[in-house]
Length: 515
Image: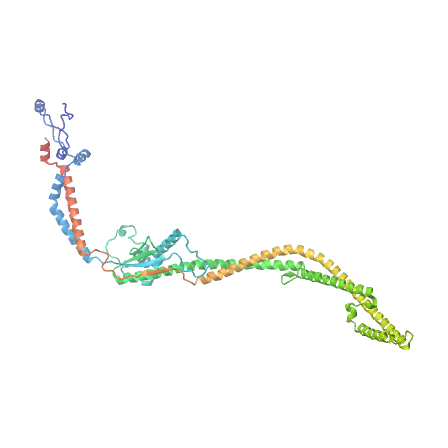
C-alpha cells in the first residue's frame, strides 16, 4: 500500500511528541536513496524562526512538557507566593480600614393625605407606585442630598473626603494641566465626589424598603453620615414638594390678577346695560315685572269687586223695599224702621180684632205704618243709590287698572327682549366670577400646602456599628489571597518562559524519538 507521505517529511501521527519534533526540523533524505545522499553535499542549517505553522503544531503537545515547565519554575512560584502573602498581610495591616453601616428606610410612594383635593396626585396603580418609590430612592443618593450632608457635617474639613495637599502619584498628574480639575479647586465638589463613592443603595424587590450603605474609616463617622443622609433626604423631598407648591401658587396668583380684571369688566358691562335699558331689578327681579304682577293682581281683585257690587245692586233693585241684602242689613236706620213697622203691624193686628176699620185707633195705626213703610222705601232707595255709586267706582277703577296693565304690557315685552342680552352678560359674568373664586380658593390652599410636609418616609432600622470592617478582609484571608495570587503568577510566568524556550530550541530527545 503506497504511503500518503512524501520523502521529505516524517510520517505525521497523533502523538504530541512527534508533532512537537516537527518544529524546526530540517529536510530529511530517505534511507533507501544512499547514493544520492552521498553524492550531494549537506545543506547549511537554516536559522530557526517561530512561524504560525510551528505554533499550530505546538498546540498539539501533551501535558508532559507542561508539567516539566511547572516543575522548573516551582521554586520561583513559591518565592512569589511568599512575597504575595507578605504583600497581602502588609496591605491588611497598614491600609486604612473601611467600615460599612446600613440603614433600612421605608419609602411609601403615597404621601400623607392631608387634604381631600391635594396638589400632588396619589399613585394608584402598582407600576406608578413602583416608579414613584424608585424616583425617591434615586433622590437619596443625588447631588443635592450629598451636598446637604457635606455642608451639615463639614466634610470639607475632613481629610478622608477632602485633602487640600494630596500626596502620592496619580494618573491625573500626567494629564495636561498637572491634574488640576474642578473638584480639586472646589472643596465642596471634591468632598461630594469622595462621598458619592462611599454611599450606595439597594432596593427590596418585594417591598418599598430600601437599604442605605455608607462606608467610612470609623464606625461613628459612618453612622453620623448615614443619619445625616436620611435627614437630608427627608428635607430634600419636603423642599421639592414645597418648591412645586410655591411655583403653582405663584402661577395662580399671577393669573388671579387677570381673572379679577375680567370679572370686574364683565360685571360693569352688566350694570351698564341695565342702566341704558332701564332694567332696574329688586331681589333679582325686574321692577317692571314686579309692577306688572301687582297690576294683574289688582285687576283680578277689581273684577271680583265689580262682580260683587253688581250682584248686590241687582238684588236691591229687584227686591225693592223688602230687600234683605247685606247692605240693608248693615244699615241701622232700616233695621229700626223695620222694627217699628213690625211693632205697628202687631198693634194693628191686635186692634183689628176689637175695632173696625174706621175706628180712630185703626186709622192712626195704618197712617203710622204707611209713614214707616215710606221711610223704609226711601232708605232702601238711598242704599241702592250708594250701591250704584260703588259699582260705578269699581267699574272705573277696573277700567283704569286694565288700561294701565295694557300700557305696562308693551313695556314688559321690550324689557323681555332686553333681558335676553342681559342674561347672556350675566352668565358670562357669573362664569368668570366662579372661575375667579375657584382660583382664589385654590391659591390660598396651595399657599398653605407649601408649609406642610406630607412625605411618608420612615427609618425602620437605624445604623449600628458593624461587627467587623468591610475592607480590607481579615489578615489571614489577605495572607491566603496574596499567597495564592503569587503562586498563580509564578506558575504562569514559568509556563510562559517554558513555551518561549521550547519554541526557540526544541528538545532533542523528542526529535530523535520521531526519527
